[in-house]
Length: 385
Image: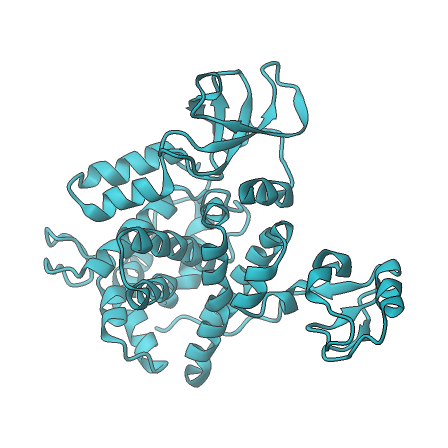
């Protein structure tokens, strides 16, 4: 039986101050977005021209707002957004992908998907470290949308590893879309499995086993005729030794193998059904050791690092912090130290270069053991430096 792919209602608008995006406004030129009062009522429509500097200053002084969704409508908006806005753009982008994946109208599915993924791909390219951060710092309560979020996490890893492998832009984009759609037939089931905290039932196991073929069929019904994309989706759980599913083949395409590795890696980093997320260094090690001779496995570990952005760590200095940026080697990322050696919170996160012996990473910390949290906007700004 086909899953219910009914479209979700529109997500609520999220706002930011007009002053934050003032660089995108030119007096005398049409406004590139709607401007709202502080009560979220429309003040000036997109396309309206500002007549003078005085009018512009008046808008800023009255605390006017813009809708983040409007800022996020394309790759160009991502490229020009201040770093502090990127975390909110990620939230909005993942919501848009979720709605696109649940699009029921086969005739508009591909158009909705393309519109949703363009800014997400731009977010990955704009700041790969912040993209990896999304994979590690997953919302443990977002089980209802787990399937869609997991698709984005897998697609982030897929795109970055494909680029490291030197794949063409066409194949990188194709793999990115395949990662996003490989589980389109079982999004709701993934949410239920993330919540239930017990092994799948026999019926659920059957649906899991059938989902690669079912996802391909849904994509074909939506007019997707790219054979490599479809093959990667259908084969993303196959194994070279024939022990995979749904067909048990041994001639698995390279793109499907990349999807599978990215899928497994991001799943290891997820909290599901009471199960803790695996430590990032262990997740990377297990992926690599599953086939040390695999160029894909090696590229994944090199691209994300042993301590990827979003990983909580303890330092030789006694400080605790969170990785915000990959460093010169897989073992030496940039860390935002949040507490000193006595456990006291730093007034502001302190940037630490872990290639220096006194700030070297000495351990990975479970998220639950870290009580201090730093605003995502501050971490995004530190990552961009």
